[in-house]
Amino acid sequence: MKTKILLKESEMPTHWYNVMADMPTPPTPPLGPDGQPVGPEALSAIFPDELIKQEMSTERWIPIPEEVRDILRLWRPSPLYRAHRLEQALKTPAKIYYKNEAVSPAGSHKPNTAVAQAYYNKEAGIKRLTTETGAGQWGCSLALAGQMFGLEVRVFMVGISYDQKPYRRSMMKTWGADVFSSPTDMTNSGRSILEKDPDSPGSLGIAISEAVEEAAGREDTNYALGSVLNHVLLHQTIIGEEAKKQLEIVGDYPDVVFAPCGGGSNFGGIAFPFFADKASGKNVRLVAVEPTSCPTLTKGVYAYDFGDAIGLTPLLKMYTLGHDFVPPGIHAGGLRYHGDSALVSQLHYEGLLDAMAVPQLETFEAGVLFARTEGIVPAPESTHAVAAAIREAKLCAETGEPKTLLFNLSGHGHFDMSSYDRYFAGELEDYDYPEDAIRQSLENLPKLKFDLE
Ligand SMILES: *Cc1c(COP(=O)(O)O)cnc(C)c1O
Image 1 (cartoon, protein in one colour):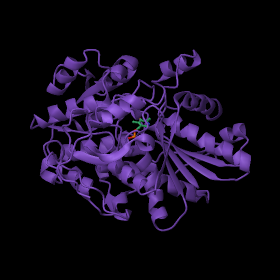
Image 2 (spheres, helix red, strand yellow):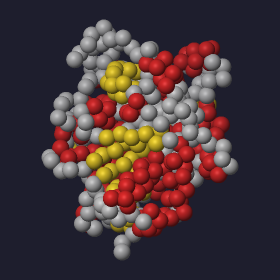
Image 3 (spheres, protein in one colour):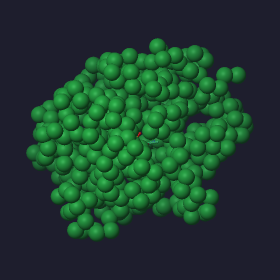
Image 4 (cartoon, helix red, strand yellow):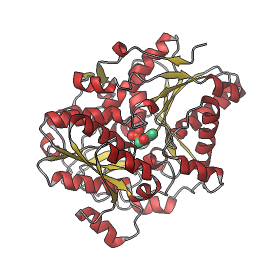
């Protein structure tokens, strides 16, 4: 009975898979403030040309540069596991597999794109990168990648996480980055938020505004985003490509694929390579799992909205809860984002991807069961996928269906143990669906002068 299914380094994928090549309708373009599609030049103040090209490319396969593969080889290919012990605990006839992205130095899938983004910026002659981070996973990943390519990295860290995750801060510093609690008084965006709410806990949207503002104002500085954008999801497809090869080794194929969904990057990363099969007729369900307190895909509206809180980014057509929605302070910091990837949103809108929401207590319960059976303590974000897979496996136990389930273990929870402590102490709550806050924030969606549809 195989437990770990491993690929050789030489079997690591050489190309990223671009889902845009297989979408039934062309992806919606980002729009400028005038309601017209933005051209590459609008993005070039903050992104290098190669990444802008990838953002718009419809080529199915995009080569992974050798310099990027060299660094990815420090932890890739990542192992695929068969969760025998979890299956036994659930007495399920389902086969449960998980892809373990916790093995990267930063502890999650995020370095997969951080390394690629740092590489293309370095090649373009950029010296500094700014970014935001929620729980700290992305800040760590970019700090690591910046260090590998000799770039300075400045991180705006969501205030509430800055206080909750001191060791994420230390880790970023270890990899040479500067870290600030957002909102700061260093940017116009930060100051405008602090004026309205001096005790603002911050949000990903606010931190993005600060990082974008600084990058746009400096020649030597670009901005890097850890999720949402097409090129980020592209870089994460190495996860699903590897998983497909690994399942082939054991002669299996998933009926359902689950991944936690914040901005959609690890979900797109594991799901899109399977979508390629779905697009050519294969029956596979791809399920994005989000928190009930920040239910973007399951309760949001599909509309053009800003990617940040202030309105500095182009408008993206996506499921959104409104760009000024500040989600409750749940412990899955990486899932507290008001919007979602445009690619994931469009495919969900067209009924090709599924989404579900899980309440906080159920996710921690799943995380603890997973730790006690499989050994790995999952990140609070990842427990969303664990919980969803457990629900499905229990259903299989009732119906007797021996389904094959695959989920992405997007990261470990070693820096999130205070959240587990609070769960054990009975201090965690299931936030009500923040209906009023969402309704209010949806009233502030940008009004478009031109409706492109
Ligand atoms: C950031 C993060 C997520 C959510 O981000 P996506 O872009 O949706 O993948 C999920 N899990 C972990 C461990 C993360 O760090």
